[in-house]
Image 1 (cartoon, rainbow, N blue to C red):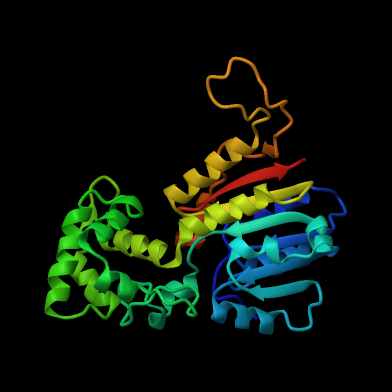
Image 2 (tube, rainbow, N blue to C red):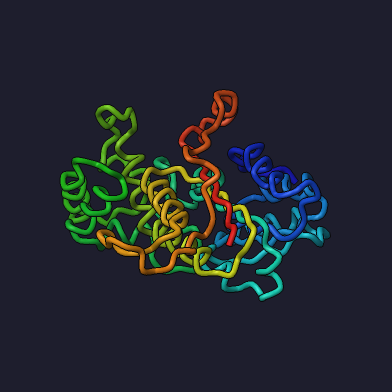
Length: 310
């Protein structure tokens, strides 16, 4: 089955995992299975590898269960990636040699009007997991002015966050906001100065992050990896947002520290030996011009790689 989503930085992901060994074997965790683009390529490239993959999107999980029907080397779990490691057995965890987390919304989620992610959708939903109660409709129609402004300021990095929140409150006093198209018209589609991005896109992104708790999920995944018993594994994170990239970069820097004594301590008292491993990428890997030309949605992607060596 052809994937409706083009996997980003695919060759770079395969190259990262191929550096483990010539006869690479073991388990790779695909934390964001999506429509199986990365997992399918990994299975083809590494015949001795097994994959444990998860996704919280029911449509993606059902698609991949059909796509990989009869493939014994992949196990698919529906759930949040922050909980994936805790769902592994001790034997499975000991076999993990690679982790891939492709953070963000998939092309199909953006393109399907009924999911309510895109500016022109007749729906207003944005839930990656439709089992959860909070949706974009709830955020837009029930959050206070301060709560909306905070979301737009922190997650959308919009300087006019308060103005946008006021627009939404004024509109919903007349009638509930029920479609993404209506919300985009209320927010307005002006370009954000210096960034060349439609402000409605940034506001939608901020609401989506809030609805799906995306930054918290990422932080929980990083904590789960750090606190696990994983050894000798490659961890690849692909993100599409500056806030996500900052979280990953800062975490990887902390993981490299051998000494964890508080700042200002004149002499190490922790004894050292606390490093989790080392960063493979001092600067993030970004898509080539050819990849961006073939898939414009890859343009914001950044991949950071960490080698767990403890």
